[in-house]
Length: 273
Ligand code: SAH
View (cartoon, protein in one colour):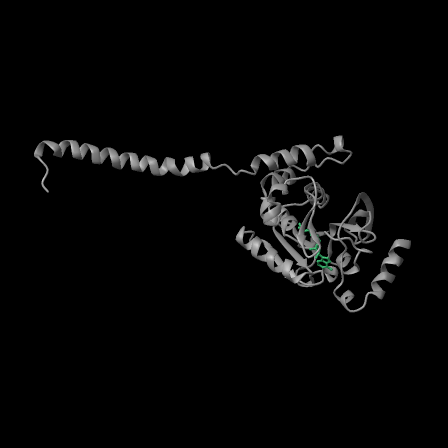
């Protein structure tokens, strides 16, 4: 249908206006999406850091001070690492169950253990006990590569998928018994063990670089344990000290499934030590 000539000018003006507004709308639209859709959990993370992690002394804890660690705790979406029915409690000051009798550690403990490692951007870090993958993600935001081992196959699978979906490309997962470390990628600048061991596994000490640091809870299962800082100096001498009382799920051993007696013995020996 032909338009009356007198409408042509008005139509052209309208079309130009529309095109201009669409272009602006496109650009602005993108930005305003960011503005009107803030991360709904950012505020909760900021509070978690302020109240539970950086303010430790008031709670009778050592406050975490490491800048990069605090920044990462404000960034990593912890709610993505907890079961859907616990998302509301993701930023609470406590560990949470993740299935298979295991837990995602308390945010303060994750931050504290990360700080203990004095992580650096060039570091290659080994984690024993992937669990949900949260500690691995926190480390991955700071260091170069994270290698993490999980003994429960289903958890290893879930964490691998989760870390992939969240695009943590520098985290490498493996299903197996972490007691023996990961020789192919050793030595490591730092090692973090997130399950309580009866003793410090010698293969992990071996796989620590001179100058490296390891954080590991040591003690009886399901009771109060000692969070140990293990430091290997440049000459290879190893020093260890207890930094805090903690409670972790036990470091289990692949062979315990068949025979539990030797591990009980190991525990007894290490308690006497
Ligand atoms: N770092 C985890 C916390 C996991 S709890 C997180 O951020 O969510 C400890 C985990 O260690 C559990 O998933 C448990 O299955 C695992 N684990 C226990 N013994 C292990 C072993 N020998 N090797 C590897 N993983 C082990």
